[in-house]
Length: 334
Image 1 (tube, one colour):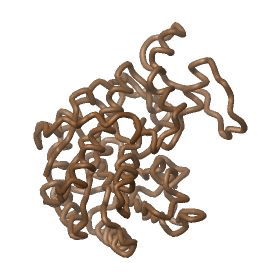
Image 2 (image 1 turned 90 degrees about the horizontal axis):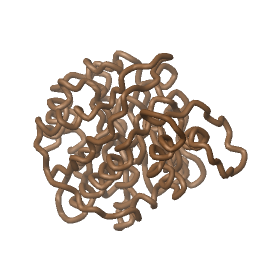
Image 3 (image 1 turned 90 degrees about the vertical axis):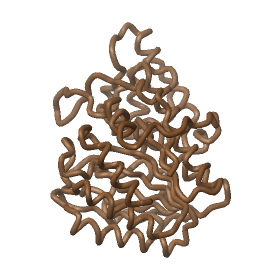
Image 4 (image 1 turned 30 degrees about the vertical axis):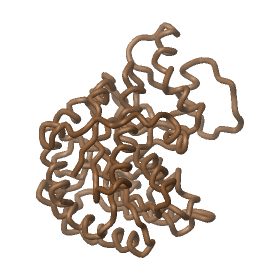
């Protein structure tokens, strides 16, 4: 299986985040990338396909904000990472906001996703890795893996959050759709991919299926409940399968089977997998009980669909085990 990543994805390196009511060291560290590369190899550098595929998903104003946010933070006399503290619950009207704090709040859903000096560059090349994997599959490979960092599934058209700045899975899906495919997205990260759901909630042409921790107890709280099934033309094209804390493979596997049947029934011709290894039993911020060997079974089950598949990396914060968990998943898929 081809692997794509760019070393510039290490450049995003915030120092701290606001988590569970206190400042903690930032969990989505560059060493995550190093651990995966050490286990599966560096792969290939992605081509630069420019901004157009990203603009197919994200708001132009949001993208312009991301590119200058940290410079604007420093220009305002601040130091360190840019982070918001005022978030509008309801955006009543468009405003020409000048102060950087206001603009961060307008484009963010939480205070756990600081913008550092290298954030835009890392996010941009993560998106290019996702596009490279997608085009490899469109070009004849059965599957390909995009080692995306930072992850992407929590950010929507015009907001960041959950360590995510560009929605790599959505960018991949739109590229596949533009090539004439019927697309399904399967999200197996511990946390619900709220940004991906938002982007396709009223779109009946793309199926979004997610298996994740119950949002009544876990981030992102406000999305991912079982009764969210899409709206308008997208009604029925969203499938949420929330599971309780402590879920192990024996209870996870039936939920995965339900998601895979939905994908088959949808008639997808290409699959985008948001793969997060934070379902691992040893993950420091998550509460499932999946073991390394279980990822091999997970990968094999998904491969059983027989679809062209682009796999994009999402979460996974047990750095010492991350490489082995990714390798096990890819081995099972192969």
